Image (cartoon, rainbow, N blue to C red; front, side):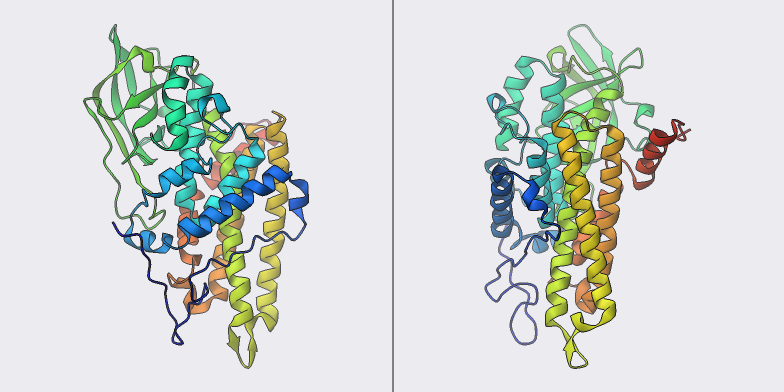
Amino acid sequence: MSTKLVEPQTSNGTAHSKTAAGQDLYKHPDYFLVEELLTDEHRLIRESVQAWVKKEVSPIIEDYAQRAAFPHQLLKGLGEIGAFGPTIPVEYGGSGLDYISYGIIMQELERGDSGIRSTASVQSSLVMYPIYTFGTEEQRKKYLPKLATGEMMGCFGLTEPDHGSNPGGMVTTIKDKGDHYLLNGAKMWISNSPFADIAVVWAKDEEGIIRGLIVERGMEGFTTPEIHGKWSLRASATGELVFDNVKVPKENLLPKSKGLKSPLMCLSSARFGIAWGAIGAASDCYDSALRYSLQREQFGKPIAAFQLTQKKLAEMITEITKAQLLAWRLGVLKNEGRATPAQISMGKRNNVDMALKIAREARQIHGGMGISGEYSIMRHSMNLESVVTYEGTHDIHLLITGMDVTGINAFM
């Protein structure tokens, strides 16, 4: 599969969004000097991941999105830059970094593409995190080092065809058969499933209690059909998990997982990464819109000279700045072990909504060119339509905040 992307050309033979040499010109916006709140290590991580995205992701991602193909060759690089399990201790193959570092990595990856960030987010928060948190020492040593390098890839099986926002209603089950568990059911909209080597699956036992277990590719009755025809996350691999009398060894059960709280803890970790990641998509759209508005001339002057364009740009950088400060504070609380699931919900909901609005405004600034693959705008906009839904929908997160401030459950 070729990874070479021919640089889009304008009528004068030069690329709109990049230099003639195809260089990614992105510059990270930092209007309130939030960088000064970061450590030297944080800044080094940002620079390293941003450089990798510019070199490895930017030149190919539009081509892969247009073809609805996943760039498998990036997996090794994601492992090399520490994007898989950055907060996992070094002894298990992780980088032992703090949560602000994790957020920065997710932000820079999503600046490249939400699908690439999703791949890393699932591997880190939804596969490595539950194995580390709920697994045995043997499970940690067996799986985590290989997951950290990308030698082994995983996925997370919670959402079902008929149970999305109500995961407690799942119908996937495990039955104790003495020397193994018998797993039956199906999961839907699972990132990484078409190529994952393992799946962290959540199912109800015979007492109706939700348990987590590790299902390995190759187990008889376990299949992962791919979902096609997506308008969103086109450069990401999405599929199903189907379990037809799958025999899962007893040692594959995550013994410390019991009840719905366990998978929700995983989701909180992933949602934290999304709160940071969405800023990356928004920043890329803003950066492109700002540069385009200074270059594009109408009525004898750059469109950046018009009041309505300046209004859009001023509102964009204001919202990005607010989101950056929210994410930074959330990271501080997370590092201190004080970030609540409700606070993380607010961060995810606010920042993804912000990114969606900025993508739409950026498209208008680009005019007709905004729908072209020469720019990242429509790709980000379509991707964010998935991000605003997965890991808890926009409205579900609103109800989580409402319940937190009133003490009243409005879910049912």
